[in-house]
Length: 77
Image (cartoon, rainbow, N blue to C red; front, top):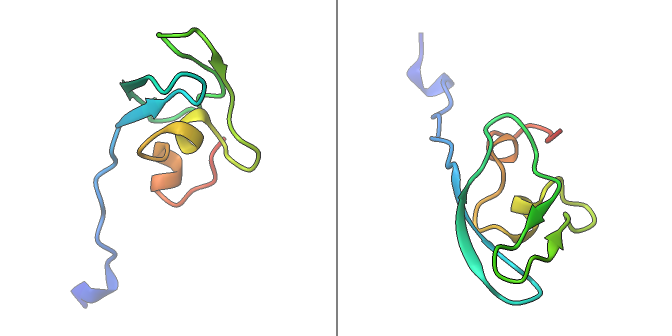
């Protein structure tokens, strides 16, 4: 068995700082491990965020870290 055949597993990051495009407010949130977040309400201005075209969730659009399925190289939802 050759150890170089194994891919190194990277830990999944569950915390992401989401930035509201309307008011610029930033908040750290914990992402769900097995689901996408299609909507997010800004706690500052109460704007409802939706994913940008081509993104699967609000974390991929407005977060500092993409959602867990994308981090794992999988298709998201």
